[in-house]
Length: 471
Image (cartoon, rainbow, N blue to C red):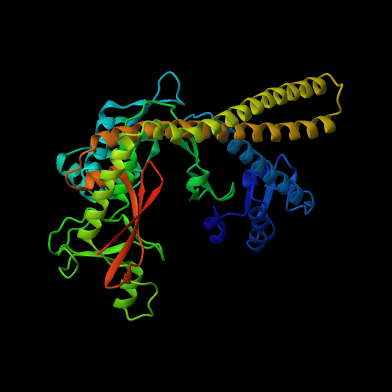
């Protein structure tokens, strides 16, 4: 229509009412006050009694503002409804995530898709074996596994964005990575990961992970927590073969105590033990480009680090198996927190019930004319806002109580792992990932010709432990 106006093919634009032209006040003002006038266009809005030929259009700007306010208010209501669905752990996206189907009884619930679900489990198994997302995508392509977009097209006939119908088995590494980082496969409903800029601009923007709405245990899980956590650590680390084909089992887990950067692995034989060693990434980078040194070397050989970690693991595993009260001690603080959280949970539940009764009472009194409409609206708004806040607090406490249960589960996992690795003969990548979160390396100190090293070992299930040794 705009092109025809500019070509001179149109002389009159007729709408049912002004809102049909648009609900964006700025754009409506541009077209009615500038664009139509410049192109000699007569504009008529039938129901609103607007006709630019007559010139009596003083009411038009006010109607435009009201139309925009209506769109803004409607957008708020829709967002509020979607948030309520999210807090209830309901699925409200246009289609379920790969590996799941909509429950035919309740469309807001998910059930496992046997065909796609087996592929998801296969992807996680390959990731546990140490394959990168790109390598997994390549294997799936060679195996002839349909991509999520191809499977969706096969079942529904709808073409997903960027889907190439000639490449039905073409997997991208980004698709694999999205699957490997999706907490939905743990049985948790994850919503509010994206939103729009505003009701005027529908462009999608990512929401920070801290603001996601996660409701746990809403549907059957495909992956267990321990596997998911291991995979997150694996895909966050770039694991590359070195020139001497030495196995760097500590890849991505060794950090500098001063600058916090990862220590780079060097396979050169000049380090003690002849199997390479580690050096601070910031220091090494500044040396390579000739800049001022941002940190000190923090050098340590692979063999001394290996021996120190292995020795300390022997001691730690023995301690975990002998004193029976250690697991109990780890759970004491969690039990105290649970009591306080439960009290707050009951308090907020009582308040939510009270607020619901108050809201119903106000609506009834306003309906029969006992309460003035203005006062009723103010009271209702206040109670509704408080009710929403109380619901958010209830969900937060539920999450905290759920996390407390996870801590107790961690203690059980710790006990299982300690029994599994009680007599460790040698270290490998699997043992390191199972038991250790990270290693912090301090700058060594030299005294009387001996160099003393300090390492902080951060275990996955207990506090960090400093280890010192001299060479």
